[in-house]
Amino acid sequence: MDPQPDQIMGARGYCICTKCGEKIPHQAGIPCREETCPKCGAKMVREGSHHQQLMERKRKGENIP
Ligand SMILES: [Zn+2]
Image (tube, rainbow, N blue to C red; front, top):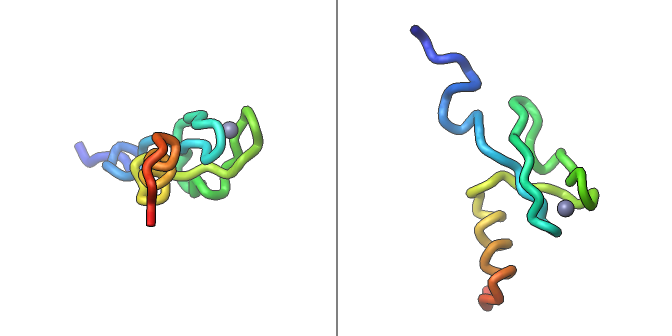
């Protein structure tokens, strides 16, 4: 029972819109930054990535140096 590539941690997850927060399933082989939001057409980032965490903090109104 070898794990399939798409079952390995890191190959799954979601892409999140930098603008409206829309979430779509990450597609293997397609970097989130190359995806566009189905709702607003903005760029997307990988859920849980450094970029997404910064974005979340900004949305909550935190000051980021
Ligand atoms: Zn969007």
